[in-house]
Structures are given as C-alpha cells and as structure tokens.
Length: 393
Image (cartoon, rainbow, N blue to C red; front, top):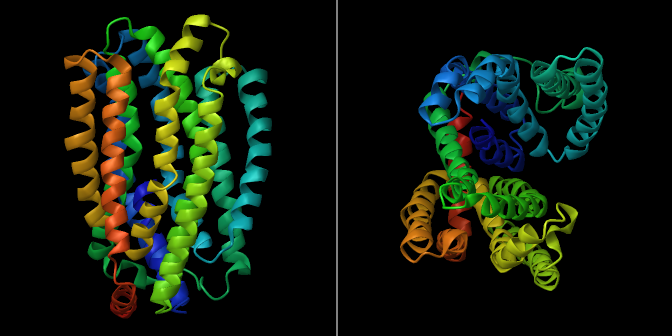
C-alpha cells in the first residue's frame, strides 16, 4: 500500500506544479478508493495467516500464535490505505511539518496506550496490535482533521464523484508504483531468508541482522531524499520547467552521494567496533567485522539508488523501473548471490556480494535513464498527463 500510494507523488506533485490544485484532492480520493479495494483483496492473508505460515515451514506453535493475533491487525491494515495517500497529498504541497507534528503527537499517544494495554491490562500480543491500531488511526484522524477543517483550502474541496473517474488508469499507475517499490523493499529481505538456509546459520544471521539494522538506520536519509526528489521533480515537470527538474535531480544526487561517502568512510574506519552497541559476543563481533566492507558499499550504493528512484516516481516512470528491478534484482542479483554463496562456498559473504551486484546494475541503469532523459520532453508529457486527467467525466 505504501508503494501504491506513491502514485500520488507523481500526480499530486505534477498537479501542484501545474497549479491545478483542485485535482489534488480528487487524486487523493481516487487513491483511497484503489487502496481500500486492494486492502479488501488482501484480507485472506490475515484470516488464513496460520495456514500460510505452516506452508512456509514455520513451527505450529508460532503459526498458531501469529494466526490468533493477525486478525487484530486488520484495522491497522485499513488505516494504511487511508493514511499513506493523505501523507503524500500533504507532502506534495510541502506541508511536511504537519505530518511531522501529527507523528510526534501520535508517538506520545502510542507510549501512553502501550503502557495501558500491555503493562496495565496485560493484553500481551493483542495489546501490541491494539496499540498500533490506535496510534495509526490517531495519526490519520489528526491529518484528516487538518485537511478537512481548512488546512488545505486550495486543494481540498470535500468529497466528489470525480474521484470515480479514470479509476482504471489510476489502478495501473498505482500497481506499477507498488510493484516498483515492493521489489526494492523485498530484495534485502531475501538476503536474510537465503542466509537462514546456510549451514550453521545462527552466527551469520545474527551478524547480518546487525548489519541490516545499521543499514536501515542510515537508509532513512536516502529515503528522505527519495521523497523530496520525487516531489520536487514532479513539481518542476508539472510547471513545465524541465531544467528545474534536471537541476533538482543533480543537487539531490550529489548531496545524497556526499552523505553516503561520509558513512562509507565511517563504517570502513569503525569496521571492528560496529557491533559493540548490539552485542558483546566475540564471535558475532568478528562476523560483523567480516561483513563491514559489504555494509559500507551497500550504504554507498543506497545513497544514490533511492534518489534515482525518486526521480522515476516524480517523472512517472514506475512501469519501466519495475521491469528494471525485476531484471537487476531477481534475474541477476539473487542468482548471483546463490551462485557465490553455495557453489563457491562463500556463505553469507557470497550471497550479499552477489546481491550488491544486482543493486549496482539497477543503479547503473537508472543513472543512464536519468542522464539521457530529455527533460523538456518530460515536461510536455507531464503537461499532457495533467490535461488528460483533469478532464471532468
């Protein structure tokens, strides 16, 4: 749903740049319709979670526990379908402070409700689910109240039947956005899955989990550039300013690369001390030390790749990038990792090195697409898209 909601970064971003403010609220409502429909289709995953987990080889006890608690996550599941489009709607108007403030308040509410449901009433796993449901719906309620009560007078004019127009076109763009981002987000989850099937995998999984946690922390910075670049490029293209979109792309890429180089140097310099904040086990510390160079290069590549993905989202290239991701990640990266990990007996080092190769190929292709882009032509395409999708049916 997060991926499908990114279609709004293209449409709302370009509409804001084109000053077609009234369409932004319509696009958000279309996204709500599409994502709520998708959420309904995914409901069987929650109702039959126990059976699915058993089929994947999980223990009966774990599967039964997950099956019992999964239905309590259904309200959270539906909150995502409403909240993510709303966040993109505000983001494209550069109202990020509103989202940050709502998230801050929701965090305070979350801490209070967590204490109440988990510590005070001893609800256990169900209490965790209830807490998350409450916190995420509270975030949505605050943001929607801001929008509906006059916070966005130019872009929100209430609910409209126009939201049901061009639904199929919106579904296609949302699906392409979802596939593009899901393929990226799942890629390094595959790394942990493959590592878990190695012989004597316990130490390797511990070390890899520490590395992935460090990577996830640092990844928040490139993801911020992903969101900012996508919105800025979409705004400039919607305004017909191809040169502005190109300039935003260059500035974002170089800035994120410099930050990535800083963390690359930091990790290379502290390679033998990285895991001390997580563990005191000498065996795990040594394993993390052996993986540090791969972590450094993963962070370096990931300082550029999300920015280029943001350019793709802002330009509406999601369908093309989805094919690039399939080829780079799953036809090159994963097979290369399996080959190096098992056939060459390199273990987790080989698996991760192969998958870095897939990321490098994907980044190279996106860089070539971006460098060769005719930005004035993209601005014309954006203008045509806005004219087409702004028609009242």
